[in-house]
Length: 356
Image (cartoon, rainbow, N blue to C red; front, side, top):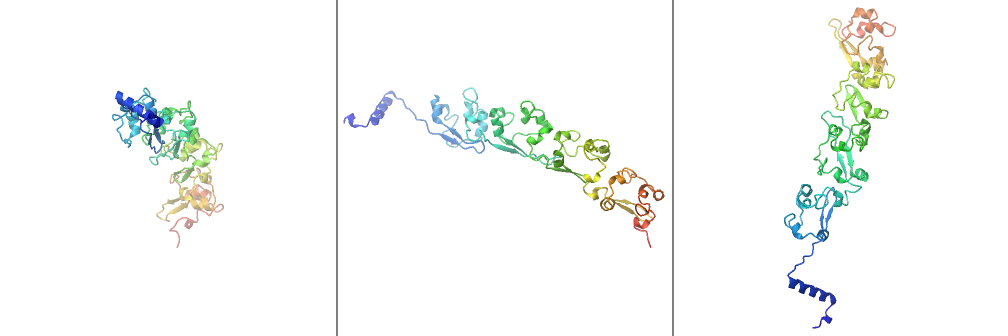
């Protein structure tokens, strides 16, 4: 049979086969591509042809590094970062480091990237400042590469990096960059809103007073109150009216100049029952007398300054008084004189056991 009747490509293939047979050479064509599915960081396309084209032989990876299996080993990325699997070559010396994420994860690591939500734990006395959403796209758009954060100070596994504001202020975790030089400082209270999504919405309840962040953050910055005169941990800053009158805690601003003065009690004490409530004065002979703040403030519309701090101190039972003093126009008698209010001599109006 003449070769002229054989198709040209068959002739070439037959010739190559003769050469291989004569020399004993076996040429193994590289397998196809392998796709490693990634849940958060995007899929990775491994190209056999690209690696073989670099001069690597099959024995460089198989079976010592990778068994001949299409199933990826468990904890693949963790192993790679420890120098196993791909990391045996991709260590920054033989080939680009495995921390160069975008070299392999081309779909998701690059913008728009992955956003991760860090849930600020409630409880433990910490005022809830709102969760923080970390957006990779903002950081990669600013020119940061993955190895700026991974694997240090942040491991590549979500949930394994404990974070606290105190650590950040010491230059750890986010504070590595957010130090006021490379990026805005976490320690600066003026920057809280840049990360925390609920600042200005949470309220703090303190013994009959509801402190509303929203009404304050419209006019003030976080740094006006934190960390002085108020620490960031709920319940660790004692607050008393005496201290406020002295210009401390709330009184730093509520002095009648910068903000309304402390005499405007009902601006803060929103529950009249908590404005001293009803005070009971015991009397074994005439029966107990009850003083109702609700009646005097709520119904009669008296301001707190009508009685405090003269003739009555702000703490119950700290102002000693007697009936004879009232009849001389002191304490309750300063109003209960028969003109401003009923006379102190109208015993049954206060004492519950007076009468027939």
